[in-house]
Length: 545
Image (tube, rainbow, N blue to C red; front, side, top):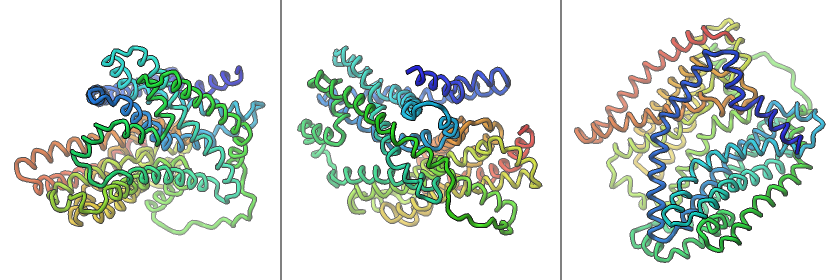
């Protein structure tokens, strides 16, 4: 255990957020103040959203309590958290266990591989625990106070401590079992990316198969019958993921001691099993990423002639596709968004059941679909960290005989191309399954214009304050403030456009609202593109890389 805690302290001192802030406060107080200011602004911006979630959680808890369906509420909440934690935890687990730069360092230490595995999984568990505390605590506290079952609050906190471990242990077992297979691949990084994508597709396919068991048309009579026969509904939920059902029963008092014991044994037993398996297989997968390929190597060839902008564009795509962490985060929208559209369409039965084409105005449908595709398609952490991902090699950009405006243009085009491959397939699917081709075309234009504005703003922010001193690719693309800007900017744009759309729609109609939004987005995109190229290059010139 001493070795475990020593490695935990070492990890925190080298890659932890507090250690980074302390080092920045000593080495660069001005930059430290800027980061603290940005954190405060983000906290103030997110506080109203979390307050709205608290109000919604309280209302939902009260509604389920009135229907005497508290057990169903907790089963739903725990199952949803495990599903989301498994999808995102799988990517994080593969990145943290096998693709970090410190793996070579740990491979040389006289430390058991099971200890290194436990340290890396524990750090991911702490991250998941923070999200579990934020999203599950309000439901637990509201239930305990409204029902008068105070012990349920303490048991709920115990379940919150346990539940992040369940999806992480499943993700760690899958990654440890299958990552050694990359040793037989010529390009191991791409093989790791393909394995991760296949796992995600299997999880999403399972969700689609479960949703197809629901009736195609859910009317008020069906909902009332479902609520009146809530025991059958609860039993169907319990069969999806039994550990979540055990935790829900432990909180709500249904055979509390038995289900509490089952929940604890699941977490402890699963952790012990994963620890034993990882003790034998973890280093095989890690060494498969560290060793070079022994096959025949092709002779190096001179690069083909192309413009400087095209060269930067191609270079960015090579880096993204050859680094699994970058590909998983930058291209996730290209997989998730079309899959979401397909799942919604197939789960809703035939096209007529959606009734969007006949009952909803085509321009209103275009606005709704455009906002949806614009938000989901612009969650592009790869585009928001174009400069940050240069890291220590940033000085190369300033030394090469290429104008920095050309560099910004190439990186901006790469970001826009990522948005395009996320939005275009979704627009085609929406045109086939949901709305008319005219509405889908207008929605595609709106979504792409949102993507252009979002990419330009994120590029300006990344040029203004890139984080170049990262320790691993995962930190560069996931654990910086710049990576979260794409979501915040997209949300702000959609909220502003929603206000304009509602006002114009009430005054002049849906067509006028759609036309106004397209014109505003086109003008803002043109202005922001010019600013991103000129001001972004000027900001980069001032950075001492």
